Image 1 (tube, one colour):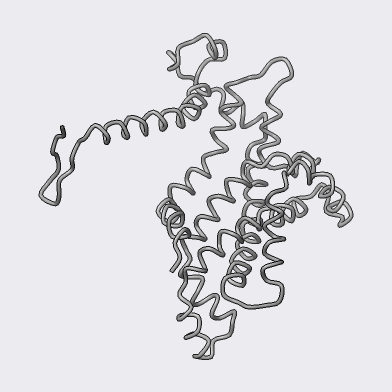
Image 2 (image 1 turned 60 degrees about the horizontal axis):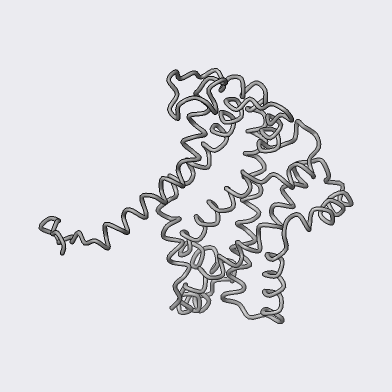
Length: 284
């Protein structure tokens, strides 16, 4: 049994399978969005109603936002996070696109061996690398600086981005690359003018995924940067968690303000991101 719906362009059949699928997706969506809604509502409620008040506050108060801004010196650390994220993304995009193109379209000795070694680093947990990374950054004289943190982010996040960009460059027809070379284009010219414009969805995917990773990264930022003035947002926001008592409205207010840039980036790039998720899986 089914019901027919739609317009002159086509017909849409409401079947039990479609209804069940819609119900499952709706439940999953509610489960996924619940923590975000709880966080925003908690930042707008009175402190004594966090766990014993109604889900939707009876009185909306905005005192937590100026408190969180002052307690965390949000503006200064937000600027630190922006600087770290932009420079890290620039390095990740350069290395991931250039190396992804090389692994997909160029021939050089030990290419497969180097690629496998590069992918093997993705299997290493961040916690197992923190001590050697700390010693290496210290030996370079970059400990307790944003430059050292940026270097670690670029080095640790590039392998996955290279793996992702390689799959996108493999979709680019070899005929286009060969035609550019025959016309006298250099390899860098072919890369920038021919191949790179065709993998914009892949670049958008890397930007969103790595920006989210950099923005929320906590371990490296806490260990490698001890100077409070140099720290990004996440370690500073974590300081709002008390040992015996936590000001939940201030904490959730700081978290709400911190995720706004990532949400805005995703909203502006969601079409490229969705296209990138599908295009990178195709070959031919």
